[in-house]
Amino acid sequence: MLQKVGYTTAIVGKWHLGLGDGNLDFNEEIQGTPNDVGFDQSYIMAATNDRVPCVYIDNRQVDNLDPNDPIEVTYDWNQAYPDVPNGRFHPELLDVMYDHGHDGTIINGVSRIGHMRGGKQAIWNDETMGEVFAEKAIEFIEENHNQPFFLYYAMHQPHVPRIPNPKFRGATPTA
Image (cartoon, rainbow, N blue to C red; front, top):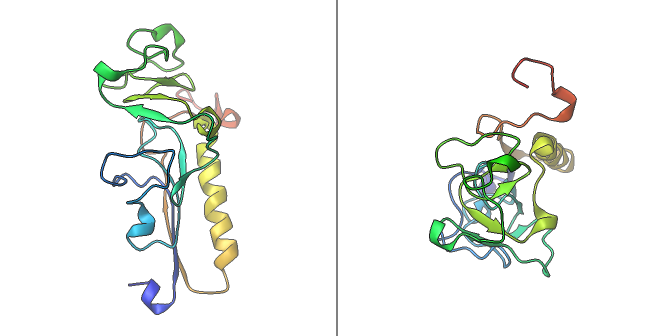
């Protein structure tokens, strides 16, 4: 509707409505993104910040993906990657103790829902995720400030895990 009346549209942040048909290959162009339902641009997380894959999706591609280090993802414990530590069997590697269901692959010291290997160059940093999304939103605004635009900025912070940026550590008893 907004595009029809001349708006440039974008989403930045947490999509949480799913991608594709659930059978995704994150190493290829991804279909079923916000770009397929009315957004000209999208910069989102692949699922939520507690699930794998822990990567950003820039329109239809994993941002920073090295084709020589493909991403593999499964949510089936029977297909978990034995060469990748998980929170269930390696809690000593965690910076944050997991709760129910969050006992899969450990990324950035956090045990996630599901299992992932590969894509090391593309993995986000939980501590700076808020800044990354804010920078993408500002970039979109600066590029489009002279024309009608709509930006859906969906912050990830309300969702677990809540990992504070180092500049805020110790600012409160819970940070």
